[in-house]
Length: 116
Image 1 (spheres, rainbow, N blue to C red):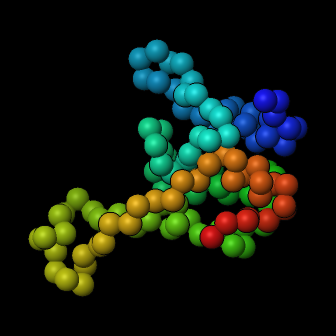
Image 2: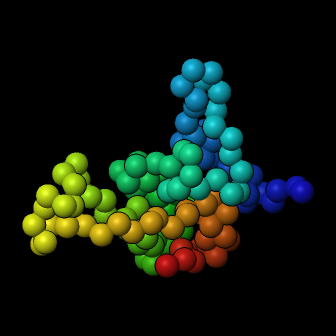
């Protein structure tokens, strides 16, 4: 299946600007429209995810008004296990939602963030 111009543009932006490489082989990670930034084998940490999304919103002129970073990178507990923390400091585990390149492409086409 052939990719549209927008799909190619978003994938190429991600490949050249953000895509990582395997440690030993130095080969780039595989990238497709189903590549998730927040889940899977190559998920980014929240700080990098925020940088990627800020770059995305600026580069593609997409309005970030409805974007919620915590949906895709929820608050994680620290290095102290919940069992040792007082009740007021415990963090419930929340699974992150997948943030895929396809979602980015669809938002570029709309001009604003479509999800959340």
